[in-house]
Length: 142
Image 1 (spheres, helix red, strand yellow):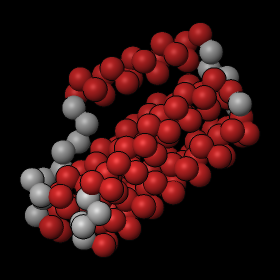
Image 2 (image 1 turned 90 degrees about the vertical axis):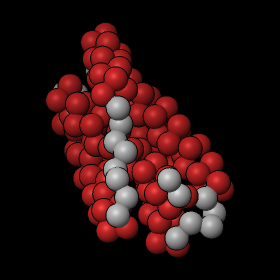
Image 3 (image 1 turned 60 degrees about the horizontal axis):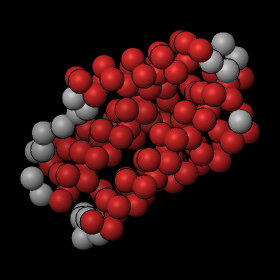
């Protein structure tokens, strides 16, 4: 697989994790104001995910989504973590940790694939900025 495909698949997987995690949390969280924040994040993750899929398909690459085992582990972890505390503060903390991992991996991938197609790099940078913005917005709920 070439660098363009690998970078696009990173964006695809990262945004897929965001879409699936936020969708699950919207059903768990009770605070309406916080749910609205989550819905906004969901919409942005969904748009980035759609753009990555479209770019992969247009370039003739296969999408490499998150594996079933990873999906199950994440689903169970979220349920276990929120079973004891589904407060906006706790959920925001969980999401900040996830977004921090996303930021770190995005920066590493931008450096690793610095010669990738400029359109793909822009999509990666959009995801990075979105993750950084999520962290700032979620701090309000800590």
